[in-house]
Length: 247
Image (cartoon, rainbow, N blue to C red; front, side, top):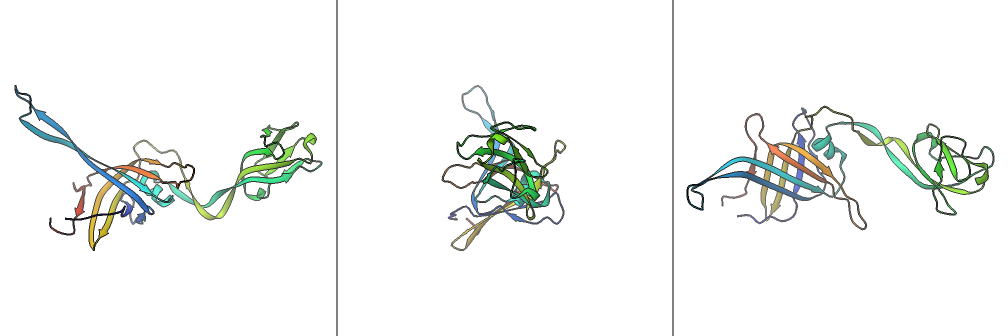
């Protein structure tokens, strides 16, 4: 007999790549496992079946985590590659439009990535982006240099620039590219919880994730979710459940 409490710990390890690093999914919030089989009833002339047999069995699970882990996402769902560096936002960077040539250079121009819009500070209204030759209320931007150009009529007005920029030496970027149908990383899932020095463990040898989802909302943490299914490995073993005592 076992009393279990709390979410436990969950580690995933890719099995389709040699010498893969085990990854803790990050402050597990919950693990839901379901093992369901299809039942087939045999009927005679009476209302109730005279026999019931179980056919195929499906194992599905859902993992909720408290943190966003690129390593965990890649091990369970993407199976892609990382590159060094990351992106950040300049959100509402305030600069006034000078006189000729009516251009603003973004503070992070050397690492400029993408323009994400310009707001006129005085009115709170968005400026309209055009390819070149902006008129009043418009702007153009060269994303290779991070230079914004405005109309002479808007000289002196304060603009709030929002854009993304690169951080070449910090963080990592998961590069998602097109892959052939049928490809997905395969991983082992190990679950562990302990109470009163009694440990309970579940291992599923081969898992395949069907979904990663995340939702952000007011006054709450983002809780990423991974949905997966389990299947037998090459030796016919699905996994194991370890109980701390004979019960």
